Amino acid sequence: MSIASTFDNYVVLSAVRLYDRSMSQSGANLALLLLGAFRSLATATTEELAARGFEDFRPAHEFAMRAIAGGADNASELGRRLSVSKQAAAKTIAVLEQRGYVGRDPDAQDARRKRLQLTPRGLEVLQTGEEILDDLRIRWAEQIGMDRLEMVEAVLTERLKALPNGFIDPGWSDQESNA
Amino acid sequence: MSIASTFDNYVVLSAVRLYDRSMSQSGANLALLLLGAFRSLATATTEELAARGFEDFRPAHEFAMRAIAGGADNASELGRRLSVSKQAAAKTIAVLEQRGYVGRDPDAQDARRKRLQLTPRGLEVLQTGEEILDDLRIRWAEQIGMDRLEMVEAVLTERLKALPNGFIDPGWSDQESNA
DNA sequence: CAGAGTAGACAATCTAGTTGTCGATCGCAA
DNA sequence: TTGCGATCGACAACTAGATTGTCTACTCTG
Image (cartoon, rainbow over all chains, first blue to last red; front, side):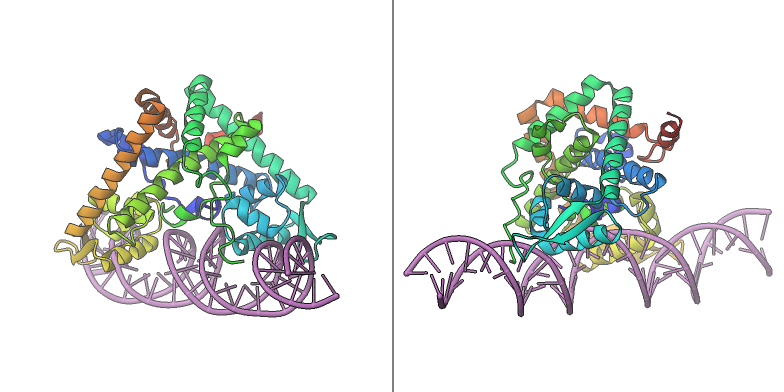
């Protein structure tokens, strides 16, 4: 799922409120907690990025940029890594390019491709976003304790690793359903 | 933000892969883990509901139905509970009504309102969804241990409770700028 | 009883996705 | 060498789930 789109649209509901209603034992509550926690990070990061001058940078962009920085240097590959269609990836790239975060040059080796690379501003926003997220994590740790935070991370990592190859593996979306 | 829309669009990226790349200490990884975990629950639930005959029932609907069952008996109130605009809530209601999950009758006390109530089928889908989510939670517990799962829930609950606005701590960016 | 506020309808727009199609290009195999 | 299948990116039409703004009908309060 592309991380971006629905980022800001996710209903966080009031996980806390549900919890107080003695629903802590329910699977629904667990889902709400996870979503609320994620959203709190995503929203805070997006707002803080905006405050630091990156006005139009949305969570989806963050993930796309991260994938590009991680080596996805063309639209099709980006789509695969984000588990979205290459068309969706191309749209995201178009926005990022227009806003000055990535550049696109013809590929000398393969005339079909256009090679993506981060602009200086793209690098800057990525680093800033990382900083903000790291700060947020530290704030979590200050409140709940670093040991417990690390346990949460360990548990979630363990759990995600156990999922049938599909959720966490970027290649899970049927490779190029429409090539 | 409505829970629904972007549900299935969220890029899960590869939280695990990032973790393996020794990013476990990063805030970005934490966000990815939370999102991935949520999404695994949401997707599995939606798929299982579809398999049990509720084909067109999306995660957003689940949250809306839950809120309606919890007492949101008109569109404006539903919007407030879901933290979306009343227009968005009204659209969701229209879908739910059309698919037979909720009914709408004029309110005898207030002629502006239309009172929402769950249909038998609506109740059924809600109960089924709850069942599925509870099962998924039990499976988590089987894998990672109930004690650790409960700790994760406690930590997230604690963290979310600390967010005054629902999930955004207004103070955090101020402290940032001072630091 | 006037005015402020709320409920819901309607419309236009936005974002982030989807599928399907297409021409250009690449790469492999006969 | 050709020639066919797969891939890349572009374009178009569509969907879902949100947004803001405007409007009328109605309720509540002073």
